[in-house]
Every structure is written in C-alpha cells, then in structure tokens.
Image (cartoon, rainbow, N blue to C red; front, side, top):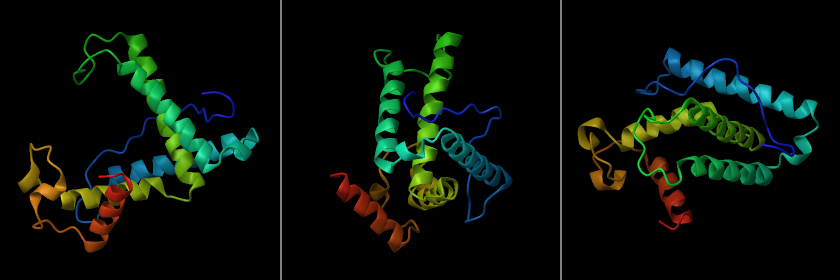
Length: 172
C-alpha cells in the first residue's frame, strides 16, 4: 500500500476463530474481538500521527480495500484450484500472500472504524445469525443457500429482512 495507505505491522497473532453458541462469547471470541479493537486503535493512532485521517473517507478506504482484494486475487490467478495448506508454494509466495491478506484486513478494520461499526462484535453477531440460518443438522456437508433449508431454523424476522435487503441490493 502507498499514498496515505494504512500499513501497520502486527507483532502478535490474533484471529477470529472459535464458535459462538447461544449468544455467548467464549474466551477465544472475546480475545479476537479485543484483538480487533486493539488493531483499530493502533491503526487510528498510525493514521493520526501521519495526518492521514483527511484521506480516510469511507469511499477512499473502500476503493483502497477493493484494490487490495484485486492484488490478493492476482496471487491466485492462473493457479487453478489450490488445496488447503498451499502445498507446492514456496515461502516467498506464502509471505506475499500473508502481506496481501493483512492489507485487506487492515483496510477493512479502518473502514469499519470510519463508518462507526464495531467490526469485532458485529462479526460475532453475524456468526450467531449464520448459526441459526445454517443449523448443523440440516446443512452439514452442503453448500446450498440458507433459503433451501426452509423455515425450520430460528432466524429472526429482522435477520431475514436484513438478508433480503442485502440480496435485493446485490441483485439477487
């Protein structure tokens, strides 16, 4: 990234792993949300120190994010289907992949901050919604969309409205 970009080195490792069940946040998910919040604060400080906030409008950050997703896509272009673990990739390729993944994450976190969205908690909430949309007993091993499973799952009316609005706005 360059030209007012958001480049931040992260010494520690954090991820959004673990399952969210019955609206409860486990220690792993709480740590992941805390890691995203720490990253958000660090990125805000990074931008403020460089007087880059003036460039970080939601639109500019979204366009930068799209550009980074394009760079990430280029890594996989022409490789065909790539198996889990990236067998046959050398360390330089994996390092480059990691850097591009980090760029996408950093811009996404910064964009969510500039839009006033708590990305960590919103992602955890979305995992809860998806758990209701895709109950294990009905969808295990299937890639079908949640609408295929009928109304036996316990997705709230509000969740369905949000999904329908999103699908409508995306032309689905």
